[in-house]
Image 1 (cartoon, protein in one colour):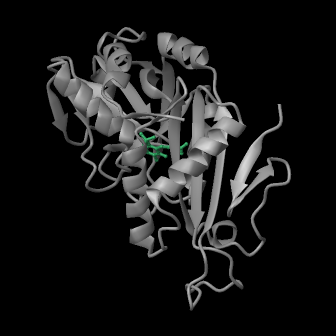
Image 2 (tube, helix red, strand yellow; image 1 turned 90 degrees about the horizontal axis):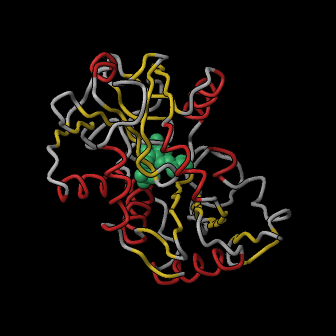
Length: 287
Ligand code: PDD
């Protein structure tokens, strides 16, 4: 089936959809993005994604390119054109196209907006969640503003490639103090031997994941105790459970860290319970 991509007001065949060579997203990674889950023909948590996108744009002083209502119209059309019932939707907004110069174009140019959607088999994610994934740890080497969801993801790509080459699925960045910040494309969590959920505060050093936000909500509903604090790799290795969260993975059990099994080396009970209850707490908007 042919895929369709949205680029600056046009719906184009995926193969030929492109931005200009002097787009600042391409030249400088001067762009932000969102990845939203599509589930059962619904967009999951669009409001939280709009809020975060607008915040990221604001932090970089890129104009909001269109209203939420307009963006939702495009999202629907892209999801439908690609016949995505379950999968993900990608939105990127760059500062726009301008003659190469590090400083912002003045006057400002029109931001570039790109959207794509792809189907992802739900069964695959569920099968992976049954076995869990391995993570490796790598030194934190990203810039300080990882709270901005920018497309400047080279350290993340290198870390995730290293994970793949080590037979793992995710890499956890570890700061100079030995504390886990987050994964290459996920937030990191542990469940202590006392059953307390621990995840790093989102004030500094991590992206405030939307799946993380919802997971905190689900944990409260399930009556689980939560501590938002940093944890070390050693503490994670001694934990009863570990897991990661992202729109692409949902709540995904972690069963090994740098080759050491977490708990008994199989998913525990907390992460699967959070995963199972997750979509009872999300905003679902039909596409
Ligand atoms: N990544 N931390 C990082 C560095 C991420 O890139 C992501 C998401 C998350 C989780 O955020 P959320 O729960 O809102 O998906 C945390 C997306 C899925 C990606 O880059 O593909």
